[in-house]
Length: 122
Image (cartoon, rainbow, N blue to C red; front, side, top):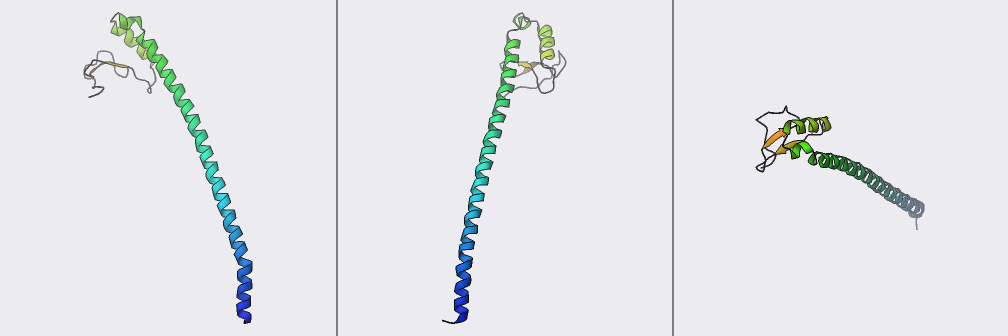
């Protein structure tokens, strides 16, 4: 065997374990990072679900309060509009009433008595 062949075998014998070790290390770090990302995404998802549940519960309470309004039961739309407008005073909250065909006849984003309100659903 020539010296060149022996040197090549020696270099391969030294580099092969180093390359394998580096590959195993890279794989380990990669899988740890993936698990860390998954864990973070689970935590973010839980937090978002809690915020969403709170927001839905808040809006549900608002709707229950409006549904039990004596003004609505007495068909006093002006008083109901004022009450609904006070409760839904922010842009993100809108209360509207519509008939069975979906035509709105009260919307807290518009002044009371507006006649060209859109349909809510088809």
